[in-house]
Image 1 (cartoon, one colour):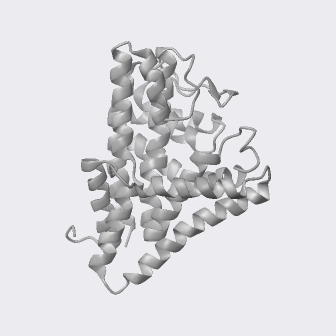
Image 2 (cartoon, rainbow, N blue to C red):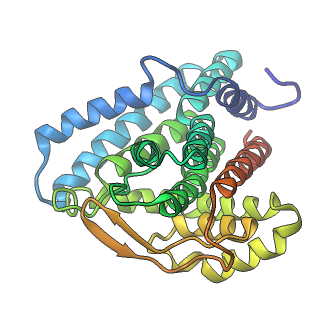
Length: 307
């Protein structure tokens, strides 16, 4: 256990380091197992109904929270066992290493001119329709995903782990996974996925803004520009949270994000974020480096807040 840190703080830091060094578990990933179980339940109870979707989201999320509560209670008399479980939970719910690896691979493909391969690879980062995207649009999509997922896959889990320990870690990841599965405005999920999407918005309100602040602090000589663009453009995004970190990244990297996107046949025209040039593959690599810095800063903040 890291010296001079409380049990929760030590577990969060150890889990963050494990994710940074080793990435996701290669087999039997708990998040994948949760997704499989959630998909099975969806097939059983799906209906084009907001109340039915709310029941589904509640069952899945509170099952994860309940497991976390049980694990936390079982280890209340054993600080080392509590530390080990928090570290393991943090490791499996974080996605910083995988996010950086996908961003780096996308940059490599785009730099090599391998656009068809990059179109296929984009699905590892987001659900955007990539069939007709050219190199510039693929670069923008990947850069936006790196920014948004820095908050969703790194800052937010660490925040909820610091606030609520194991239940916070597992509950947040369960809800965020549900949002990725059913939180789309497609004909099938427009009503059924509404509760999961809105709940995910709520639990990310604070982490997304914390992520934007940390982005500003990690921006070096462009901190003032990152702050200005974030405060000016962060609310222009249709999501109450994604635009916060995306705008901060745009200002920090002196690039311009936003534009027309397509998801499952639904076309969205989004406001532009930032005032620089359109991102290039080299900027995608810079976004990966910035994401890593923000993740390290988030781990430090979480350790300082947690008991």
